[in-house]
Image (cartoon, rainbow, N blue to C red; front, side, top):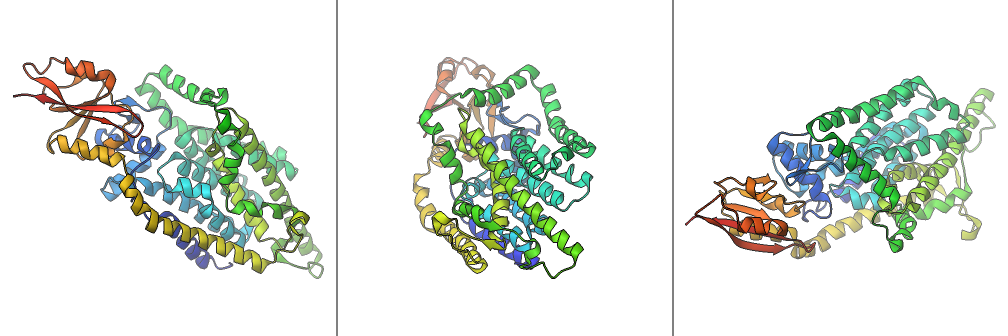
Length: 499
C-alpha cells in the first residue's frame, strides 16, 4: 500500500470498526473505577496532584490516566463510560498513525501499514484498548517511543532526534505506570544495537540528556506530591508495589505456569505467522535483482538489506528474552508483557512484506506469495472488525441485563432525595459511586460528618460508630439501605431522622 492517504483511510476505518462500536454501552468494570473516580474528584476539588479514591490518596499508580479522563470529561461536558474510555481508544489510534507516518522509510509504505493493522487487531490491544485501563495508555506511549527510536535509528537521523524525542514519551509512560516499561525498551534497544555491532553507540550525550528529560517529566509531578503528602508513606507504597511483584505476593502456581501461554495469546491472531521467520529473506527496496544497478547503489541496497536482517534478529531476541523473564517472575501477570506488542507488530510487518517468504519444512516448506500474504492480512483485519461489530450488536445488548454496578447506584438514588448530598465515610473503592448523580462528599470518620448531613454511606467497620453518633441529637442516624455488591462487600446508607 504505497499511498499514504489510502493507508490513513484504511487504518482509520479498521480502528473505528474495532474500537468505537458500543464503547460506552456497558458499565465500568474491573479497575476502571480507579481511573475514573480520581478524575471526578480532581475536577470537583481542583487538586490534580494527589489522586484520591474515596477519602484516601491513591498512590499506587501515577495520575496521567486520571488527568486524561478528567480532560475528556471537561472537553465533552459529560461524565459517562464513553467519555471515560475515549482516551484509551485515541491512544491506540495514535500508535497506528505513528506507524504509518514515522516508519515508512524503515519498514516501507506497505510494511508500516501492515504493522499498524497488526497493532490495531491484536487480541491484547483489543481487550485493553476498549477500556479505560492503564495498559492502553502505558503500552501506547511505549509503542510511540519504540517506533520513533527504531525508525530514526535505521534512517541514521540526528543523535539529538533519536536519543531525546523517544525519551519524552518514555517519561510520559513513567507518569502512566512507573518505570517498568524501561526494561522492555532497553531490552529492544540493546538487542538491536548488539546484533548490528553498534552497542557502543548507546553511550552518547544526547542519550544522557534524554534520560534526564524523562526523569524530569516524572519528577515534575512526584516532587509536589511528596510535599503535599507524607513523603515516607509515598516511598513505602511505591516500594511495596515494586517489591511485591518480585517477591511473588499473591503467587498462585496454577496461574503462574500459564503466564507464557496467556502472554502469547495477546499476540493472536498474528502469532500464527511467526514460523515464517525461518523462511524469510530480505532484499532492500523490494528489488528482485540488484546485479544490474551501479556499484555504489548496489552497496547501499545490500547494506540496507543486511541492516534489516539485523533489526529483525534483534527484535526476535528483544521480544523473546523479556517475555520469558517477566512471565517467570513469581506474582507476574501476562499483561505485564504487553509493551512487546509494538515490537511484535514491527517484526511481523517486516516479515509479511519481505521479498521471499516460505513456510518452514515442518509446515510444508511452500513459498508464501506476496498476493497470498496480502489476502491473509486483509481477511484477518476484516474478520476482526466483523467479530467486534457482531459483539457490539448481538452480545452487548444481552449484557445490559447483567449490569450490577448501575443497579446498586439506582437503589441509592431511590432512597436519597435529589437535592441532598450524600456523604461517604471512608468508602474505599466503590465503583458504583460514579453512577450516583448527586454531590458526594468524602470524609474519613463518622465524627467528621457535619450537623447538616442528611444521608451518609458507611462500610461495616463504621456501622457501630454511625449507630451511636451523637452530633445530631436529639436526632439519630437510621439505616435505610444495606447493599452487598458483586465483590461480596457490604455498604449501608444511613439517614438522619430529624423528626
